[in-house]
Length: 66
Image 1: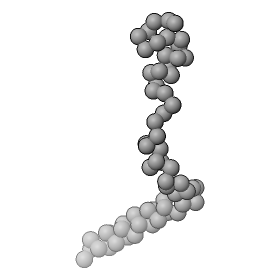
Image 2 (image 1 turned 90 degrees about the vertical axis):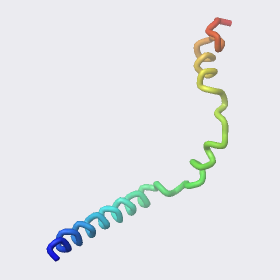
Image 3 (image 1 turned 90 degrees about the horizontal axis):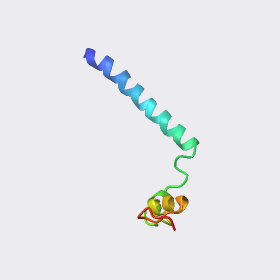
């Protein structure tokens, strides 16, 4: 019986913290756009990262200057 006096307030405290975090997330806009992140993986980047880096350096993928 003594453990319920410890576990019940602890459970209520954890639940209150979870509700507070949910309210904070909802108020700061964390749930505003749920669709775009799921669709972002379907679209390729304009160019692979190595091609962008090589283009910025003025080289080809083999490291030879053009």
